[in-house]
Image 1 (cartoon, rainbow, N blue to C red):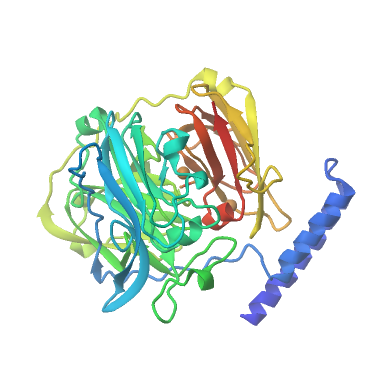
Image 2 (image 1 turned 60 degrees about the horizontal axis):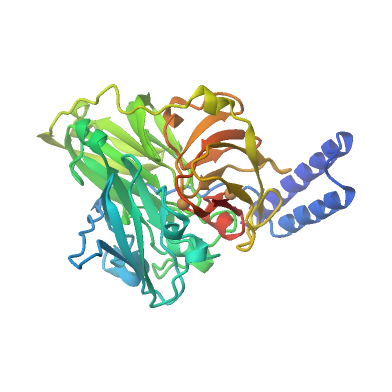
Amino acid sequence: MGIKIRITALAISILIISGCSNNSSQPDVEMEHSDMNQHMEEMHDMMEGHMSHDEVVPLNDSTGENELKIPAMLEPDNEEGIVYTVKAQKGQTEIFNGIETNTYGYNGSFLGPMLHFEKGDKVKIRTINELDEETTFHWHGLEVSGEADGGPHDALQPGEEKVIEFEVTQEASTLWFHPHPHGKTAEQVYNGLAGLIYIEDDNSKSLGLPNDYGKNDIPLIFQDRIFDDKHELNYNAAMNDDGTVGETLLINGTLNPKLTVNQEKVRLRLLNGSNARNYTFKLNTGDSFVQIATDGGFLNAPVTLNEVTLTPSERAEIIIDFSQFNAENDLALINEDGYVLLPFEISDQNGVNSEIPGELNDFTLTEEEKNLPVTKKVELFGMMDMVEINGKKFDPERIDFTQQQGVTEVWEIYNKPDMMGGMIHPFHVHGAQFKIISRDGEAPPQNERGWKDSFSIKPDETVKIAIQFKHKGVYMFHCHILEHEDNGMMGQVKVE
Ligand code: C2O
Ligand code: CU
Ligand code: CU
């Protein structure tokens, strides 16, 4: 370990030296001399903490000894006027056989139930904080007013409750919810606060896609964790300012999961619910699958892929045709690096063999939208706790942008590399689903031509999005590496 750190530091010094000489031969006109000095000091501070864009610890293979848990669907309350109750609470969960781990959950000890909405529903949710610290209830991807969005301004103190109301106006999609308290989001999510939202509409019900929840329509929440020698999620010990990662994967809170499926088409709703890890999902056989939905709705047509990458908070719905396989295939969902995420046990039962329609949606990015001038620029920069947006850290008292309700604007997001190259940041905006216009001037890949609320952005990449807010309020935009968000890589847009 010590040796590795020293080598890393040496490599960084070399990078910094070469970075410096580049800078002196090609001075950046916009960088004042004093800024440069300060910047160098910061870089040295980074080195002192032996920080680099470290290799991410690999995941352990799933042994497949536990059947995947499926989150329960939340039943509405009978109480007059209240539709659902969502309670943040502490508890103990048997993640490891016979051992209780201290965890957080919604309406239970770990993770949360699935909330099922139909487009057009008028929803009331009574949110209750039963933790002994403040929390908020944020509905990631949901187009609601700032008042219902559950950003850091909406903290509920221990014991407090608040009823929020909204109408579901957006199309069928897989969204999620998680806490967003100022500076504490990463820890609370890590401890287990995350749940799913499904939205259905006439279109989704008419397509004939697999939709038997838990049978051939399966949510998969991917979260990597570190357990200490007492099998606890010790966030303070595990915490990494550049994003907490662990070698132990939980899917829907299940350790060493496997999924038993019939020989039929199965829809997997993938959610990267990790604090920081990126996943590239593949089948171990190299076989292809189709992606049918992005974060906020169906793609226009299924896209055939051999792999799909999700950065934190992104979702993809994919369909795997298990009628092509049998038990002998030892089929598994693996990560890019070959680690087994989810082995499949294929039963000899045939299921309903649905056809996937060739046409799923009518998403359009118009010429007009493509040609709108850029009116907001977002520059992501930094690493560890020195992360910033447009040179600033988050300030709850500062509004960074204003935008008119119902008016489409083009935002240009740029990931400015540092001297060590930089890193991928997942960029997310609250309160709206948006369209990716381009990545470095090129049309986005086929499987990003649908509604998005988060996307990955590589170092030195420029992404243009067309975004419109349907409601008013103050909304966050931030990096969804949760430690970056907590460290201030976040800004606010006020929609009026
Ligand atoms: Cu998942 Cu601020 O969001
Ligand atoms: Cu969000
Ligand atoms: Cu980041």
